Amino acid sequence: MMKDQDLFVNELIELFPNLKEGLLDEDYRTSITFQMGCFKSFMQEVIVKNEGDKFDAMVDYLTKNLPLVDKRVQNAIYLNFLGKLDFSENPGLRKPLRQQLGKAYTDIENYNNSPARDKVKNFLNKF
Image (cartoon, rainbow, N blue to C red; front, side, top):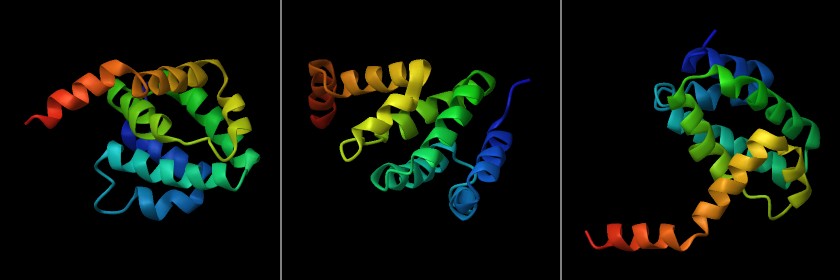
């Protein structure tokens, strides 16, 4: 069974009730991009505070659900959530990302640090 954005977000709220107000905000609720940005901010605080239990719950949830959501939701998870996390204050929390999420995080990080990205950025800045 494929999960749509609403089901994915509602289950995320069940797991992290503190996200309800942000994820269901009238300006965010129709945009998975904004919702994943809200989730990223929440998880960034978890990383800074070194709250391993919450971080592990997020990893478990995403690992189970990534294959079940549509491509649009997957892309938002990878690009607007996972690709924006900063582990510099607690690099040990990066380990629980496991295989699928860890590989995606590394791939995004490598792209973000690649010369190809700079070329695209320079090209876009010309306009």
